Image 1 (cartoon, rainbow, N blue to C red):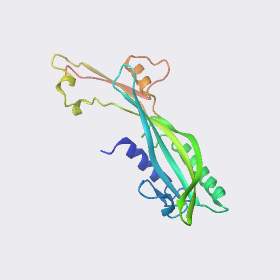
Image 2: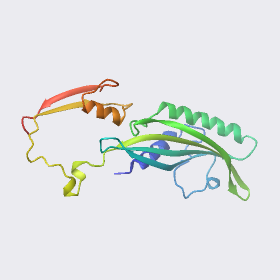
Image 3: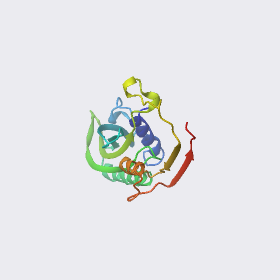
Image 4: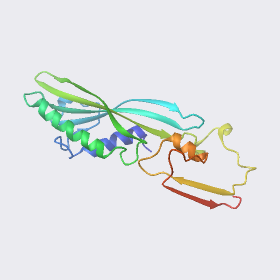
Length: 201
């Protein structure tokens, strides 16, 4: 299974291929330099991630940041071309806010950095759009736990009923899910609910 950062990065690459004036020149390999690629082009990169534990749960809330670099030839048309591609990129992001559910919060533009890159005679103009998003993980999945001390003990428990709350994109936050577990639907509600008797499983 790929890391969620990888999934998001690859999804961004797939989203932009043949969708902007950069055509198929979209890559996410850090080994390739900006001035070494066919232009115009887009480069997708993971920048950083911060994590916090959601209060009273084992859910991890990650805030991830990515960059989308628009690379064009540094000539008299550089700004017009780069800003035209930037417009295309921003429209695509607005139309795909959670990358089909990979993120729990929409992708949000943070800041735009403009500069140059290159060596010798090959100098390129680079517009770097930084974006952020959030996604959650539940690390203590029962099948994955290897420490005996953290395994749940159901030996004396009899499960009689199962209640189900279904959330569909755009997803509610992990904090809202915790409210649902406590039968608190004051600020949001599941799109579908269900219940099933388990008869003492």
